[in-house]
Image (cartoon, rainbow, N blue to C red):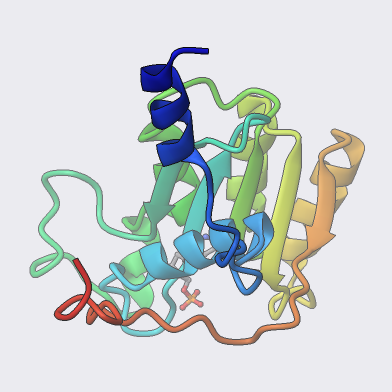
Length: 179
Ligand SMILES: O=c1ccn([C@H]2C[C@H](O)[C@@H](COP(=O)(O)O)O2)c(=O)[nH]1
């Protein structure tokens, strides 16, 4: 090895004083957090729902939240009991906004999908639903939804985590000091 090569190799050697971070978030926490963050874009005063579709390479291929259809102003269309005639659900938005194939993907949702969303999930070929809240499970449409998803062999998993909160801080630690 020439002196130049040896010097170049030395400059790439680690000093071994730094090891990798261990408090990074898991993939599941990350994807559910993206769904929950998307929900924060919703204008629905009563319920904000978010969805994040992930392929088997752990790439996000679609994100959505509940909102009025394109061209239907969310200042003009109703947000009371009549919203159900108009609003697009998070799952549907995530699927139709996706930038890649959703077949065989997993969808992370902040609320268990309703019957209408279950139909779209099944027909799109999504193979797994990871859901945060199941608070509407007692309602008929959610019973129907579960029945269809089970019949279509879409895997269902309730999201569990050991960290109930992920904080997003826009001030990056040490940003002002370190190079
Ligand atoms: O699977 C679902 C179910 C519901 N949503 C959205 C649609 C509406 O904006 C609200 C439902 O409001 P309620 O007043 O609780 O009926 O949630 C959804 O995006 N996906």
